[in-house]
Image (cartoon, rainbow, N blue to C red; front, side, top):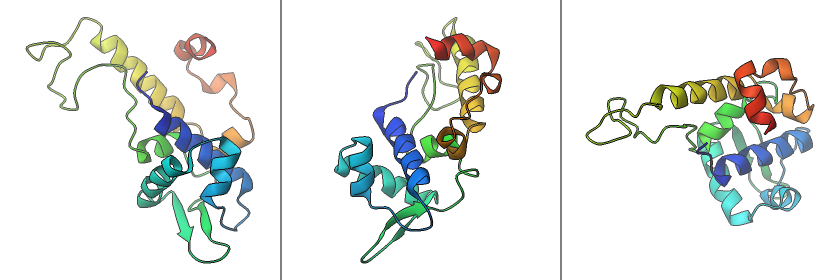
Length: 152
């Protein structure tokens, strides 16, 4: 799966923010320390999360970041996409007509990997920050095709 630390760190920090958020802003230094994420990297990620509208910043003493929506409304897929992460299993480019191989043809396994990408996106679209905070990631929420993949 093509998902870098940027996407994972974004989710980790947003879950931490959701857990700590009680209407008051939380500093990035706090989030970085709690999740063991480099502060400079977290600043870059939160600039993207803010631009996408998932968080809002509060300036001044006692400032920091807070969620723009409730944890129930904030979906994990939205966090990953906001961090400018792409969840894809194929090696094809962004152009829908581009292929995995030369000259722009699809490999034999293209549809398999594209189907897996859709399942992963569907799953991440069904999970909110609140679900992660509450550890409510019941197996029945995971498509059966992914259960063995996720348990590995």
